[in-house]
Amino acid sequence: MSTPIEAAPAAGPSPPAPDSPARGAILVGRGLGKSYPTATGELSVLRGLDLDVYPGQLVAVVGESGTGKSTLLHLLGALDRPTEGTLAFRGEDVFAKGDEALAAFRNRSIGFVFQFHHLLPEFSALENVAMPALIAGGTFETADGRARQLLTGLGLGARMGHRPSQLSGGEQQRVAVARALMNEPGLVLMDEPSGNLDTATAQKLHDELLRLSRDADQAFVVVTHNPTLAALADRVLSLDGGRLVDVTASYRASAPAAGASALPSPPVGPHLAADGDRQPAAPEPSDRPRS
Ligand SMILES: Nc1ncnc2c1ncn2[C@@H]1O[C@H](COP(=O)(O)OP(=O)(O)OP(=O)(O)O)[C@@H](O)[C@H]1O
Ligand SMILES: [Mg+2]
Image 1: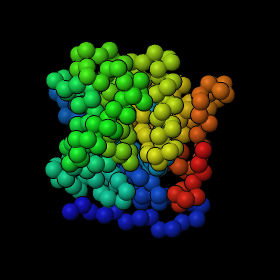
Image 2: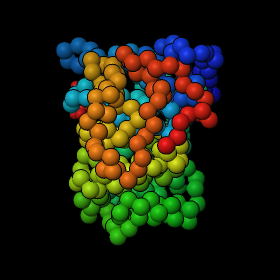
Image 3: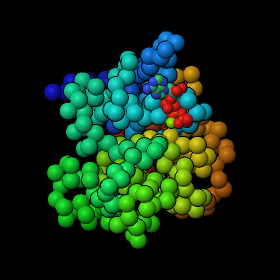
């Protein structure tokens, strides 16, 4: 059994307390810390970090190499446990679950695109994408149909039978994106999804991510070095010194000219709390502005 985390009391315009989850958020991290033991002592990578992510939002995480972006994504995806702090997904205490329950939770609720793909080498692109649905107990026909649809939508209709070794780096990355979306997870975590893509293909992927976050009400947390993607995101958070700093405004200032994306600008709203940038309490989901 997982331990429910109590919803924060209804509040006026004051910000949520650091130790209470914000209402309506799909993911709430409080005081998350991660240290690694090393030969020279403890390496403290994340230090008491707070994060709220809301459905329908695309959050970009930026930061220099080695600042802990992948480490953070692994915690948010329950692939690793924090040294300290809590994580709630739809109000449930994620790390109160045992390892088996965590694996089932990940399969059902979270899509993950790793920095280095991690596709299964002996399976075709189609099989790799369909795999999460089959693991979740879906029928072959349904999994096959949706996998074909996803791959076609990402421009890989002619590559479905290829194994990963027969795909380019960018194609492998798009297969990994399709696989992450397979079970229609409420939360999608991506580590450099457009790192291997040319500008035009990256733009198509960015538009697709934004469309999904709006239409399917999915939340995306995307680690990226791509300034175009960061400028399109609802929030841009920079990982610095083990904590998140909201740098959305600086990315807005450098946003590409209107028309660069086929999609309207994402809503800018009080939807994500990050260290150093406490936001007012979020409205209920039905009140949130939509694009
Ligand atoms: N298992 C581990 N044991 C010890 N140190 C680790 C471990 N995993 C990561 N680190 C260290 O933690 C720090 C953060 O690593 P992480 O991979 O999260 O960085 P990153 O921000 O994703 O970097 P990049 O942009 O290069 O991908 C790095 O200094 C790394 O060396
Ligand atoms: Mg990384």
